[in-house]
Image 1 (cartoon, rainbow, N blue to C red):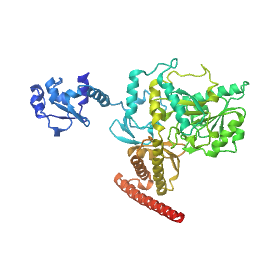
Image 2: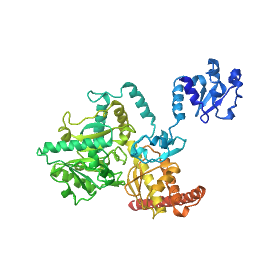
Image 3: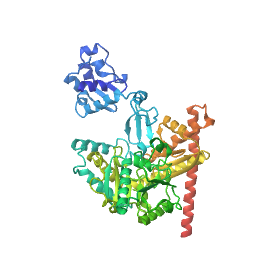
Image 4: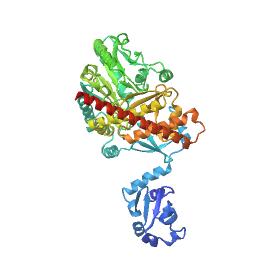
Amino acid sequence: MAFRALRAATRPGLIARSYSQAAASSTPASATSTAETPSPQDGPVPVFRKHWAGKLPTTEQRKVARMRVGDKERPIEAWMQKPGLDRLRELEGELSGPAPAKEQEQFMVKTYTRPEPIFVKGTGNFLIDSEGKRYLDMTAGIAVTALGHANPDVADIINDQARLLIHCSNLYYNRWTGELSKLLVTKTKELGGMHDAAAVFVCNSGSEANEAGIKFARKVGKVLDPSGQKIEVVSFQNAFHGRTMGSLSATHNPKYQEPFAPMVPGFKVGEYNNIEAIPELVTEKTCSVIVEPIQGEGGVRAATDEFLIALAKRCREVGALLHYDEIQCGLSRTGEFWAHASLPKEAHPDILTTAKALGNGLPIGATIVNDHVAEKIKVGDHGTTFGGNPLACRVAHYVVKRLSDEATIESIRKRSGLFRRLLWQLKDEFPELITEVRGKGLLVGVQLTEDPTPIVAAARENGMLVITAGTNTLRFVPSLIIPAKHLVDAVKILRRSIYQTRPENEGKSMEEIEAIAKAAEEVAAEAGRKKRAEREQSGAAVSEERV
């Protein structure tokens, strides 16, 4: 295995080989007869195939001959020890490379249309494809990798826990399901969310978390009304709650529902932010109202405080549960630990669902409930095989600790303010293209007047990933630890991509387009400086008046 890993690691283009004088003098005659010994300036060479004639070097030769892997240069002897050999085995996997996209596609159910890049590695706020190209990732796996790709702490936790216990089923206790549940309840209360949070059901995804919430609501409805009439679930236009049959039935979008009709009976749809329609929509037959405080898939549209307060009041009047789906907008993405945390207690939910960022890429979801719900759920009412496994729960425990840190949350607010200001400047540059910048925290939508697909493609070509939402909306959901510098870079790439797709620039070279974008960037920066100076002068004038 060592020889196989070393041979794989010495393929051209990845390894630079350099010899000391001692190494050169110790090279066996059989090796030097096949090729000249290279100098360090000769660049990457296939070391063992070319210099050791298919044989492992002697112990003495391994000590003096050196090999460079990436930015690390060590004696070959060191590469053949742990952890050096582990790194070489990792390289072996990278070197073999993935199959071409079209070749992969024939074995995959075609549920997605994917562009060409095949990603093989992530680091922080970047993804790297099989050709070595880096992409600034402003999607974070659709609001998932909140702590960045390949987060070293998360990787260490996975490695450690995988050596202890990955799975033992929910027939038994494990340490981390309970620890995670306790932390979620505690931090939710401490940070202004659901004030009466009491218990947690841990599962594997957002859709499953919503399924649990829907099932729990149906059970509560039957307890409250044994006649079985209190079963209706209300949701709203442009919502997205998942693709399993229950959550899909609450997602009233023909694109998603029609291929799988009929839906589960008992689901009603209302107009988002329409307060006047609430009394007729939510009735004595309603067991639950499920709503996103900010619709992500629906176009990054926020519910008004007045709407959510009125919705909560009506739910209390008719004995319906209020279910906030914060799968995308929760866990500090909006600059609050939960998006509903700014609401008064009377508008807090009975059920709160989360997923996405919870595992930083590991599949996990959670349904948080109050005692009113928890006391009505009995053994056997619901369950999961993989949900609550110690590996995912231990990672989620770490993620919740990080994302509930108040300094982290304050930093998200500051960086999101910068990002939004830069996007508003871009709106001023393209008033006929960009009509609105909306959202909260690092969940941001840029509303366009045209199909954003060409801009998304141009951004990808320029080294940035961005996704869409709703109708003609660009959606930005980067990691929550993204530095300000990368947010500035994101707007620069977006500007260049917009110019690249304008009809008036058709036929121009990339150099010309970059020059145009650079000039526009300087104008925008100068305008921003003037506005800041005006605000500072205005503030100084107000201060003088008060004195």
